[in-house]
Length: 158
Image (tube, rainbow, N blue to C red; front, top):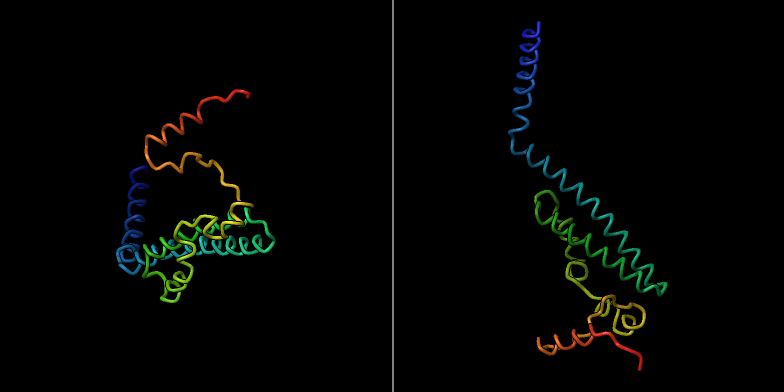
């Protein structure tokens, strides 16, 4: 009985295998499966990018610069991932879809600091840099090391 069940299951799997083989081996099927994933990923990243871009513009118009820059930073991350997804699978996207990315490339792909983006006055007044290195002005390693050591020493009341 057990052996008969195994042979029936084997026959069923063999028939399914023969029916599925042409689908799995055609290049078009492989491309469409890969494109489906790439397009789904791109769609999600595009939604994230657009929402962060709109949020940045809205917060900037309300003079909430620190939050606007955070939204811009998140838009940069989404854009880079989106751009890389499209770059890895260019045949999965139309020419119009690919060229639409180039209009935002300069602003969102490269790393842009708050001062470069909004100007030094907004940056210095509203966007407080976190973890600022007080010794970054020193170019020589010895001067930098001395500065680090000076800042590491505890200061006592005057």
